[in-house]
Image 1 (cartoon, rainbow over the protein chains, first blue to last red):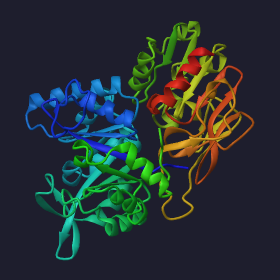
Image 2: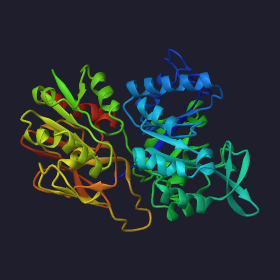
Image 3: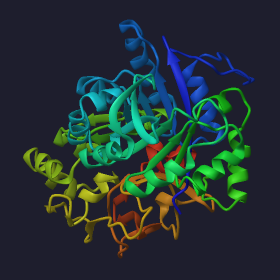
Image 4: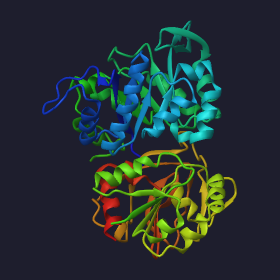
Length: 252
Length: 196
């Protein structure tokens, strides 16, 4: 049976992970490869690395990080942050990334989805959508949730799928960072509307939230950052709990 | 040991090279017919589209070469699909090593997502490639086309319906999943291939 996926997300700035304490036996708490390895050994099903560097130099460093991750870690990983055009995707895939996530660039230039899918295959192309409520309607936001776009969430998700996206990564900006659970109602609607896998992001605070996002939110995968980085939830405990709750989960 | 990886117009092949390196094996990535023929083992990876890939193989005379190999060969993902008779992807005549078709997944109910993406289990495992795996062996899949179970099936996986997650015929081995991305279990499977 296909397992629901647990995906820790690591923010990388100038080649170092930001956030992230509480792990013992670490040579370097800021080392993205060490941290990813740790998560992989704990049973993470995939990893997501988000480049939050603004500088050009930092972006080059990120490609080196991707290469190191690919050489050292034996589970799939997605990279995102700052991807603008096909040549950015090419660099990251050549460095060994399995998938790339595109966000604002896809809204500004939807053709980018087609280009990635045609060149590298749909499985490579994760379209990340940040959305929030605006006058009772879910709309997409640009630039990490700061600027509202004219796009409606459900229409955009369907368009992304028809253009060749392989997965949707949905973050509710209303739920992100609040730790009160994922946007399950909206996720469930989205999951029924699109025929590609849906990754939920934003809102994890307790282990119960993961069960809810899989059952109520009908998500195929759940992504979280701080609850893992700060050791509030351990992946082995989370997975044991989900299995006990009858959810298809991979125990390593 | 001398391991050659078939080089062609496909995507992320470096992950296979990295996976072998983690097991202490330096593989050579090549489309040179002679090097491939002389290798102890050949890996035929694949991320890409069936039709253009088959055309590329034919153009470089790799199609006949792969069919004629006598050493152990491992096809991965699209590599496995191309080793079958025919693929619905682009209506493509393939290598025909396995007498089986490659069929597109069809959604049967809401919630069926295509591609089949993520970790799923291998059942009814047989043969030396999948020897000594734990009871519930999860491996990583990402594919929109599948090979139905047939005489060459050496393990089954269920998504929407039952399909072949691996095949074997004589010296030809093939897996639909990505052992290079399947954690410890994947490493075990690659090691099993190296040990054949």
